[in-house]
Length: 88
Image: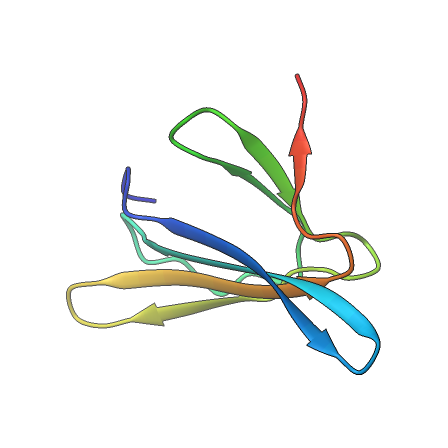
């Protein structure tokens, strides 16, 4: 990922009686990469805070968009708890 090119946005969405936590991540990549399988991600922010997004039961699906000059990586993930902060 290109440093400081990413953005992480979290929020909630209600569906009937259930509230989902939605996390969106978008970033420019330094190199072209192949699409990733369903995964669990560790996200480290510029501030040094780290989060885990996804679980074995609700993995994250990512998208890779490539043009002639740009490769973008994006995630939109919904679950019941949202990203979990890692305490080190």
